[in-house]
Image 1 (tube, rainbow, N blue to C red):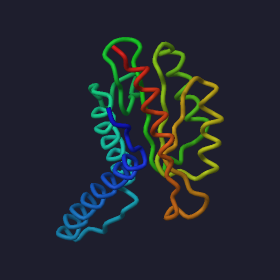
Image 2: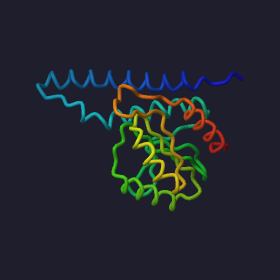
Image 3: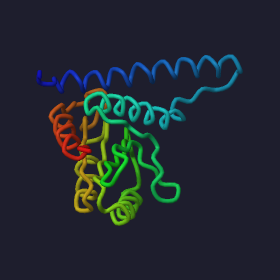
Image 4: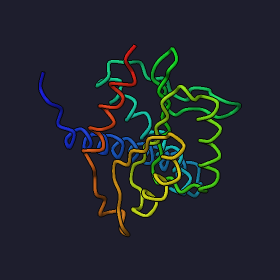
Length: 181
């Protein structure tokens, strides 16, 4: 079996997501223009996050040979972006891109999830986050038993994103262990 090239894989994840996002925005902008509406790209941030989730889920499904469940219902209105496994323990994954969220709300969410679903593996994955946000988020979530993976970061300028293929390798190794049925 050949070794995966995680640098190539991660570049492909970003390229696929960016290509799909550009296409969605072009189509939407065209529809807005046809209807003489003002197009605001900021409104499409949730769509961008969804694209990253689905592109990552497709990749993980291919690599792991497991079914990926999207928007899996957990507690109340809380959902896992991606779930692997039908039986306990499951792997529950939260995916963020440019996820500037209230720290306390993030901690509260994962406290509830890790106590209610204590046998599941909880994973937080982020694309394109500021370096300070990466450190802060890991410090908040790791003590709760949430494993954090950051595929890219930047200090100030988002156009100078530093991709981390080693993190993708670590994720795949952890999921291979956690997804054994």
